[in-house]
Amino acid sequence: MSSNLETMCSMCGAGKQSDYFNIDWRSSSWNLVVVIGAAIGGFVAAHLLSNDTAVAIATETVAELENLGFKSAGNAYLPEQLFGFEALNNFKSLSILIIGGLLIGFGARYAAGCTSGHAISGLSNLQLPSLIAVIGFFIGGLVMVHLLFPIIF
Image: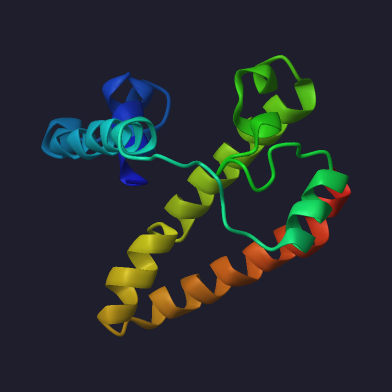
């Protein structure tokens, strides 16, 4: 999935600006079908196959998230304050989405793969770089949730 950004940038002519994107994107264009399939599959799963959007999480967690300002805690998988359309009008939420997306994209390319790619494929092949990447992903997630998240919100 993470390599699709490279393919899309190459398709849009980014190779004229940077040699990194000067690749034969046609050989990777089949990969874009995966992105389209994931988007369609996610939409179908969320809107056609899900009866109940309530999330089974601890009441203490719901209370803590509500204290941070997340009103939909325990009722929806994605907080409306971050992922709803009103987030596009809120500078703080929009900044978090843009910065987070850039960091995730950069990290996936820097680590030569995404979290699930390293954790599923890399670890099953006993690759040391994947083990190091997965440990780094977990440490980054713990730092974000326990240290940075309360500061941001």
